[in-house]
Length: 112
Image (cartoon, rainbow, N blue to C red; front, side):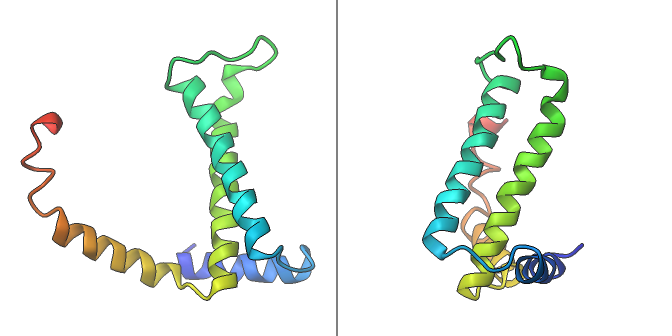
């Protein structure tokens, strides 16, 4: 699925199953909540925090994928609501980073 197809698919889902978009401020808050859930799993899977006894590390990878998909879904909702073409925005962002960081990372001693 392309980003453009994802934006269209999410819009169709929202307007049929989801009834309507939450307002932009609500979706921003939901996005922050979902990012927090990704951060929580990352801290336990790759950081120093441990899982609680009742949590199972075995299901964490599937949970992480699901939480990342939640982040992407809400981000797509916000893009749709605000008229952002994410394909175009990502390409422009990559172009900017390529020009700005053409030598920066290659010359970074910390990355060698």
